[in-house]
Amino acid sequence: MPEDQVYRVVPLRSEHRAEWERLYAGYAAFYKVEQTPEMRDTVWRWIFDAGNELEALVAVDAAGALAGLAHYRPLLRPLRATVAGFLDDLFVEPKLRGTGVAQALMQGLAERGRAAGWSSIRWLTAEDNYRARSFYDQIAARTVFLTYEMKL
Image 1 (cartoon, rainbow, N blue to C red):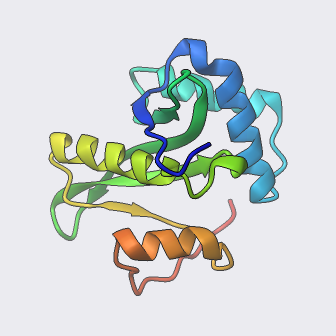
Image 2: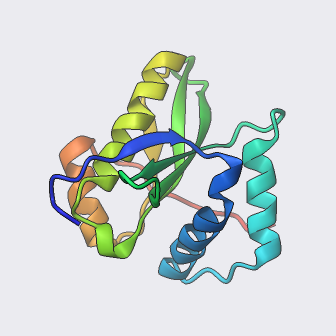
C-alpha cells in the first residue's frame, strides 16, 4: 500500500462485521487479552445499541476494505464541567501501519468531537507501546496522571 494512500473514515456499519471482528481480535491479541466471539458479540451490540454511548469509526481504503478501527464514547469531566471524548480502542491493520490509517482515524474522531462540542479527547496506551506513543506524542499532550484499576 502506498504511503500516500487516502483512507475514508466512516461510522461502523453492519456490513463491516467480519472485517471488524478480524481487526478487533487482532487488537485483543496485541494487548494479550483473551477475547471470545461472545465478547465481540457484546461489543458489537453495544456499538449498535442506541441506548449505549459506545460508537465506532473505521478507516476504509479505496476498495472499501477496513484498515483500522476506533471505539469511542463521551466522557463527562465534572471538575471542568465539560464533556470530552474517550478513545477506548484504536487499532490499525499491522501491514498498514505508517500509511496514514491512524492519522485518518484520529482526524475523524477529532471532527466528531468538535461537532459534539467536546472539550478534548483522552485515551490510554501501554507504556511499552512505543510505536503508538511516538504517533500520540505528535498529536496530543501526555498527561501527568497515572491509571489505577480496582478489581471488583
